[in-house]
Image (tube, rainbow, N blue to C red; front, side, top):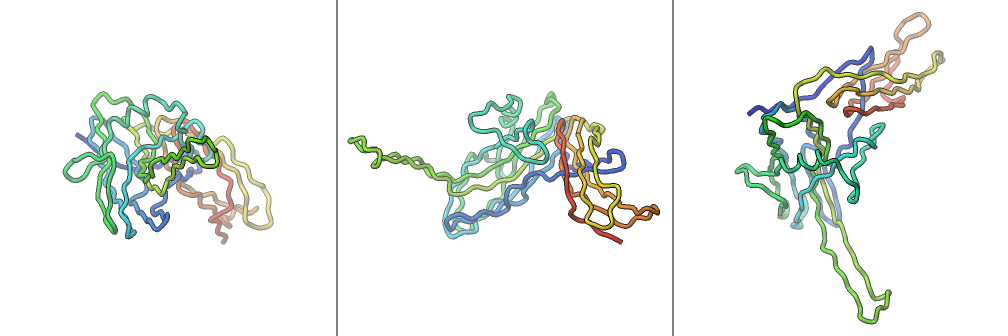
Length: 267
């Protein structure tokens, strides 16, 4: 069995690329309930066969007990353009391949006991693992999803026999939830492929900040997590400033448009 965790860094032309994937909150508060999870994101690359274990900690920081149901939310990569994170809705038909991969996952403790839900007492902390078992014939693919922990009140229906709509109500309440994102890349290492589709900025300016539009496409088979810097030169060819692009992830088969003037420094 072999397990690998790493971040891919790649350069495309003279500019490295950026994108920040949604990170679910490390800490949430609702009605006196406070939850914390750490870390908030995993980037995993594995070559089958593999027994992957991603350890994490979930903590109830409040004085109230809580019961949390464990589930998965699949990213809709087709609609997750320009860094927007889009989940498949409940009634959407998510890809069968993504659904099957969850059958190979478990949330387990140190004794490999599997959990579908967890109970946390006041101020209690649990150390758990997301375990993913990949057989030798596992197809090459990328998966992007969130592992979520949700507390949910049961549905209460109160119906009066007289049929008066004012006396009837049905309520469903989500108290709070927390989770983390997972980028799982399965298969042999591949050479990153991509292109800069657009780079637009004024050629002449008397001062900063310098606006720009940068669009980058990832044409490879796996996600990439590049970063980089744009250098600003004066009419004499001297470097007078630079723009640091934010660290990012670009999913396979998607593009990212960055329009920013942040993190600019000038000589």
